[in-house]
Image (tube, rainbow, N blue to C red; front, side, top):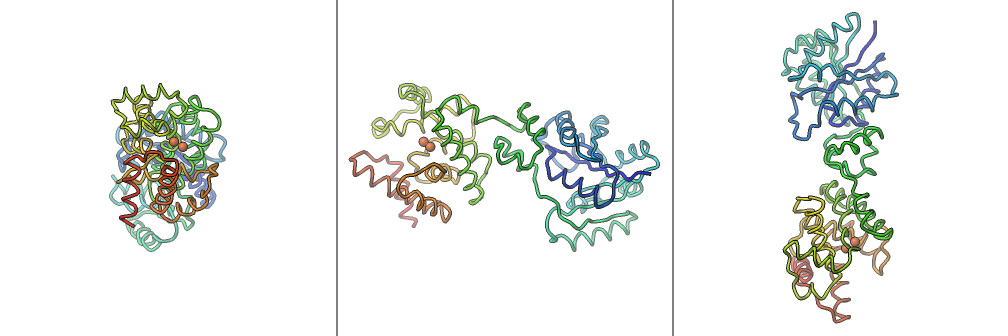
Length: 385
Ligand SMILES: [Fe+2]
Ligand SMILES: [Fe+2]
């Protein structure tokens, strides 16, 4: 008689948190194997970002390959229709009549079990194993539900140790950032996602690489990295911060006359200050380029590129992050960079004020025009402060 763990889920995509959970259950319950079962239509989740069953199955197979006691079943995908656990367990019980089944789930699912279809059949076919997602904060509740399920006739256990906290949502929304996400995904799974372009994956490093020299490429990667750090610190979308950081200087090395053409084609008419300040052109042409050539439609990302040189009054959180990351990224070495970095960790506004003061002084010393957007940002900062 074998002891078999059953671990179902959307696996959209499967990540290291799932694998750790499976291994932890295998070891602590002395299971001979754990079967990963990607579901067909998840009854508890709506799947707007759900990739095909074939892809989710393939990613599970890639993740399980070479891992001890971990296998994958397409039983729910083959059956089609809504994936009910009681049906899956009934089929597995026919396949493994003499074996003992353990149904593994996250603690959040454990709490909803009594409302699943035919809980009696589930309880009859398998023991229920709940794994806490983090800390002990749900312990009292877990114990209560464990007791409730036992009273309903189930063999139910809540395990003690919390497992690695990873969210599929986080993985999906940061999928373009290999450096960040590869910590949470097996390499073969990441490669599959990249190859198939799942979850909106795009290789931004390759895209900008062809448009700029080494110096600016390294700068762009550094700005992206810094933007992600600031986004984490200030609670902004790290996926968007990464992409906007990577592409903020995308047109900077395109010849000036071509940039003017891109701006004109984008229907933007330069004002007098902009006409006399070629340094400002790349942010304007960049905002047109990413919409037209890369098909980016997110207005916040487009504005983050558009206003990264001058800033403006009423900037969004993402706009501020890209504006500042451009100044504080690794590799920057101007006079005052350390103060700027320090302020950026205290408040975005404090950092922006410092940069405005610096720029307004420089421009006036050189008797250069100041763009109204830059003054608008400065005025907003000093009047709010
Ligand atoms: Fe720039
Ligand atoms: Fe830059």
